[in-house]
Amino acid sequence: MPPEWIHSNNDSSFSSADRQPEHAARSQKTPRAEHHHAGNNSQQVSRSQEADRPEDDKTTRFQSALYALIGPERYQKWFAGQVTVQIEGDVLQIGVPSPFVIKHMLREFQQVANTAAQECLGLSAQVRFEVDQSAAARQQRTLMEEPPASVPLRDSTFVESPTAEQRTDVPPPAPLFANTTPTAPAPGRQPQPPQQPGTAQPATAQPAGEPSGQKAKLPPRRRRFAQLDDFVAEENNHVALSMARVVAQEPGENYNPLYFYGGVGTGKTHLLEGIHSETRQLYPELTVMYLTAEAFANYYTKALREKSLPSFRRRFRSIDVLLVDDVDFLDSKKGIQEEFCHTIQELLAYRRQIVLAADRHPRMLTNIRQDLCSRFLAGLVTRLEAPDEQSRQEIVRQQAKKVGLPISPEAVDYISRKFTRSARELLGAVNCLQTYHHLTGRAIGVTATREVLKDLERDCLRIVRTVDVQRAVCDLFGVSQGDLVSAKRTRQLAQPRMVAMYLTRKLTHAAYQEIGQQFGGRNHSTVMSAERKMQQMLEQNGSMKISARDWTVQEVISMLQEQLQVG
Image (cartoon, rainbow, N blue to C red):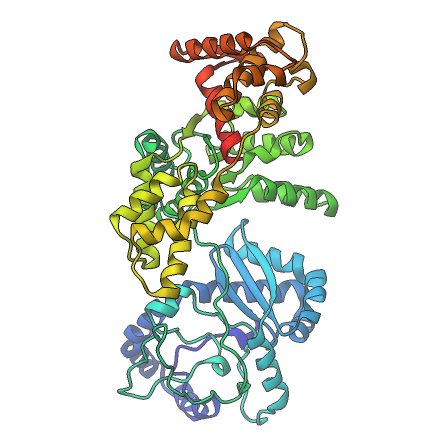
């Protein structure tokens, strides 16, 4: 490790020149005196080591690894005193002083920085280069200030910015390096409490060396993962929530892979994020990765382009818990499906946990590899239902409490009755009411709710047309729209035509004669007969074949209806 990175546990308020006489005196002590002095200070040193944050050790290891990879000359030229660093989970963000430097850094140091970060944070580590104004100000001060020759400088390459939790709960700890250490408050002076919205900010002294007109820097934007405790589960979704808890508490032991599917806004992503959060809390030593299927495809195509497939495979096949959202994206992408299938097979062979989420059942992914579909079905496939009225009420209450919205129970009931398709609609309605409350200062009752949400309710209504039903049915059954409305009466076309007529009658409320005209000029009695047969099949829990697989009629109708109403 470079000598300038060695961090001292002494009080940082003393300069290096002040320590020199004391250091010379200590060097002349006898071994007995040194042993006695070390014994007296052992408790203080241990306490100081316990107070060190884990991020400090990770930062130091990253510095050492990067220094060894690029050499002292390149490190001194591009990194020493010129960049900042912040570690948040598996993401290591390097702040550079200007946007003109980013392109060069990405071209020259992206790969070596990834290698160094993976050595310190694990194979799932990611490195990002972003513009940091504080790095630019520090670089200007470094160029303008010339230190005395007799005072050795300590390296100020990286600055560990405090996380959001540390900024709100405790004062930010001292950074690793001396010239970036914030000034300690005077004895007896209490830290100022955070300013409340709408209150005046008292004038404060401008820190030395900072530009006078510089704006306060916003905290870095990081993804906030949901918690399983916040998931509102209705009676039909209790099984899915229970399985998510089991997987998070014992990854790789049961229900592997675990596959969630359901319509838009039913909570699939919430469960995946909750598993990620709880697994990281219970097993911090495990490598847990959450990503979408699109992100997996992007990583794979990038590896193909850069000819780095071995590194890509080492990264994804050494993960302990893999969470993949929107698996539907892989449909019809044969090359990516093959790589994903081999990755799944490798992880399952070593009992690594896999959790997947999609809008459709694995058997409804008509353009996916058979071996990949069979691996999805080998675990546990769980359906997530749309929230019922009681669950919708609880979602509205939780969101209103989260944003501090005073809302009456009558208004909660009104919102839960009017927005029934997706939990995201409920969140959007609460946000609209929050804006109204912020502008007017009025409490939210049922009258104000009706007035504010009337336009939103009207815009959320989706008009379903006969052609929409025909298109959805043709996509599911794999037939053409021309054959669906033709005079052919083969069994391959009879079932899709019957389903399309039933859904058209249910969702459009068109007359029987009008529906018959839109299906090749058929008589109204044909439409009535199709509706009657579908109702009998639903009551008897009948089934039909789609792509050589048996499906219950209820599952087919529910899936098509959600697709048409939600989109």
